[in-house]
Length: 382
Image 1 (cartoon, rainbow, N blue to C red):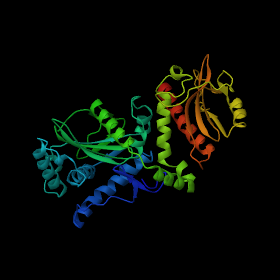
Image 2: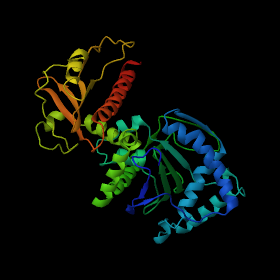
Image 3: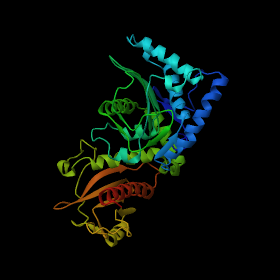
Image 4: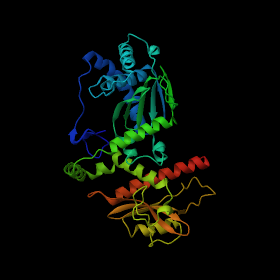
């Protein structure tokens, strides 16, 4: 989190104005710390880092994975941060009994097969974020890609636990043991987790609710200035951060999820808050590579999306584009070509002071280009 953030500091949602290095709470003796650390080390090396670095999309595991997830869910419920026991829920006794069972499994006094719960892992990859629901709340990508979260999930007839790391979600069921809504996510004593996976509507709505809660958290103006000053000290870090990547992912989703013509010339689009307007300085035709090169001489950055030259597709011309990324001193814009209208601003982001416009434009173009080529592979099989 610290290495890939816009700054090397963490903040809690309950106190966003205070920078922290870590959260400490005394839960385990030294012996149990050693037991848990073995599972944590294997999960980090074999699952977490390969996933967030996009090195693997298939993960083989055995009992260490099961016990790792179980150990975090157990800690979540016995932590001082837990909320389930503060409520007079009629299933509280069930939770207490389940915690005892989990503790015995973690200490090796019972086998994993004696656990009545189910444990699930869901990998939130780049494709999931780009094609996420158009109704996703503001900051959804930032929540999925960056935030740490953990909570009990309870209602009139159910109690479960949920926690997440960047791009990985975990669910441990308590009652009912199989609430439904999971496809390809369940962790057994051993096996292989393969993407793609699916979460049902219930869990999708739950994630939207969590993202909205995090989205309502706001730092004071003085703390925002401190963050900006820190970014200006190391703008290259910001340009390479996962935080910027999450912003770009949200930018691409909002760009793709609605028809720009519905909000043409509206001062602020209600979907993505952009002023969708025709760029009169560009000709009302798709642009060739040579034309974009001439545009690039007039602005700080200009690139279009084109098929790879070694993947010629008859249906797709290789020398023209209908998506253009342009950066000026003040902002980066993603333009879309519409017949009978010309080039329309689809998304626009202002630049933080001290950030190189060319770097922001390059990052945005790379992501849009990745999306374009992924769609070509899905549509034409290459």
